[in-house]
Image 1 (cartoon, one colour):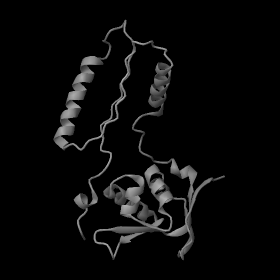
Image 2: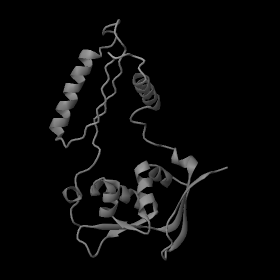
Image 3: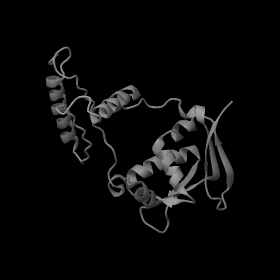
Image 4: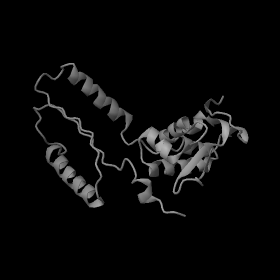
Length: 199
């Protein structure tokens, strides 16, 4: 028996009452940010309004809206009153997506769940004092705009440090076992005016 994930929109003279998705389009809707965009859509919003609500760049919003438009779940068009602006609106009053399809063909997790669980457990134990007052921990979450050259240089220097301090089969066997998991990835696109050319 199939279960469904549903989202209801205000019924503002919509052409269709319900859109049922039970094919490969479900993979597009499985992206968490795309579903969040749908949840904030209401009767319809501009890219700028969604960008402000979710605190992400307009280019990123527009990218995901174009993907959503491929499913038929939304209508996306240039705003005739505001230059370079896009508006989108739901294409129906309700969207229903088969849940068993949402998990299919998804990109592998950037951080495997077992690694996340292991690190979260270690942070809880450290906070409770398991390792004593001399235990060293460092949690960094940094964001910056880098050129491709800077990102490459950072990656090279970080790998050199990992090879120095985390060599396979080496290290100080009498010391505490430390874990390190690093990810360097783009987290947002450039502002809309930098990435979109007028058609």
